[in-house]
Image (cartoon, rainbow, N blue to C red):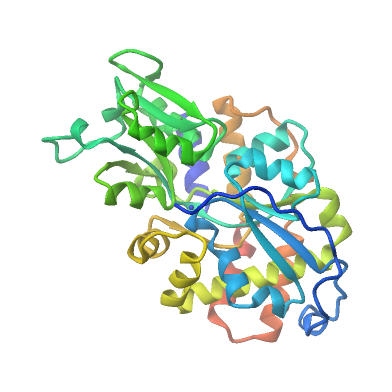
Length: 368
């Protein structure tokens, strides 16, 4: 099984602000007509107002940059960003028509799909960016350690999350069981990453999961990093957050979703060419020190790329089925790569010499 996990995560290529409740908006006529028709291949937008749900993570920066730099507006869309605290809330928002798009972790998205939720992946948002942190007293006097340092410890995590699946994969590889005891790791589950991280303040919790930017934030507060997934062979280049929408909505508003995707692709190009302003844009949504944002976004621990990366996500699906996280199912019915393909092709047609777009096209053709 180890080989299958290695294949799963090596195949894939290319995560504390104030928390608010769900903000609903369903008027599809609020955004004025712009050059979207021309820029989007003469296609008329079926819907102009979009609600985008995200988590308190620097990994969701494509949405932040697209909003702050006016790329959504360029595409004729009026997009409202709303902060949620968990994947379950984001999924519910899509199914209740409170959201048009949500950035949701790959593992919860796959489990939701396996449970019969009619949600479709149509793009990517982040690769890697997770880890675990531990209180400094447990590594005192040590210069090197791995996941084995968690044996005999109470570890806060989030059920049905990428972080939890990754930890279980690493523990299985080391032959470490989950449960109470000196030679086991006791995982204590919380409803959200925020809750799991805050649990470190309790004497009963020794370590905690951490997605971007919690890992850097934890380091700045004196905690020690147990591991970052980008540095683990079993977890390299793991597809994390995906762009998700209700399947019915994608079928009903294809031009609008293509315009949305064009904006995110433009945002990705901006992040590659304007690092300082990208950090400033992210800080408007994730209010932590700029140096911590820079570490999470440009430190090599994770990357935010809009490619749907279907091959990597399908392989990840097969891995979590083996792990017991989800029942097997036909993912092809709930994966749409045409939105991204059409959006990228239209941008390349408008910018034939652009190197960033050319690199995205090369990757898409190889890993669709």
